[in-house]
Length: 375
Image (cartoon, rainbow, N blue to C red; front, side):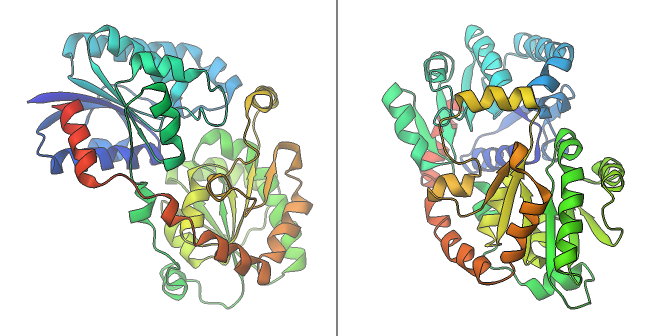
């Protein structure tokens, strides 16, 4: 039996990990999986060797603050690779950390399959040279990434985005509202404040003020809050109260798509959730706030005019973006208000092109790659 090591700790990464494992099984591979993974991959049979929650830190300052934890995690992974000698490592996202793991794996003679690599099309394109040295095969989510790797001589295939299968186009709003026991009539706003603790710390106060201001314009507005998991509720409630957010909001953990289906308009933190919102054809405004030092660093390096993936794929500001100091609650409330009218329908019409931009390589090609890498 071949051994495979996988690193995927966040919700979106676990989705991809489950996709990889399902395709490996369909390819006839009998694998012993270990790794640093979240609860769903553990339930799927992956032996978890360490707590990888520290990898959810995307803020530069937060990473520096947790540098000791990251070093210990890396040492634990390196020890596991040296003692267990898996045939392949499957690394998902987290480029700053995973490219280091990839280098160590290559030095040990272990094949490296990287899924969702660094956004070299957006910033620090020179990393392609490092990738070529330490990665045996790339699986990307967006077809526009393929030429970048091909030109550098890195084998690459497109993995069909898991959200294509997981999302429903124009879902049944009435059924979703019934499932959430929303009985009163009136417009519904969904809040998606992010899945990381740091995101909730930075965003929730401004979310609360935005909702207060929007309620002044729309007194009958109902609010749903989609939390990624139940354990985030205490943090969100503390920050929401600090921001004097309305008391009559409904918090719904771990049911993001039901919340999206029930909503008329969405206020969403930049990240995978923007694509999830777009594929379900929901009008939205995208917001985000980073640590000031991280933002200043990123602003000097990022070369794309868009942040939200739907906008990047469609090459226009379909979803308005309010980032950093531009996330002014009064302005965001105004942008949300207009989406309850014709402007929202105009967004939806443009979003209907997205699915055609996310189709992956044929399944037999992907399964051939997995047989070559994981067997």
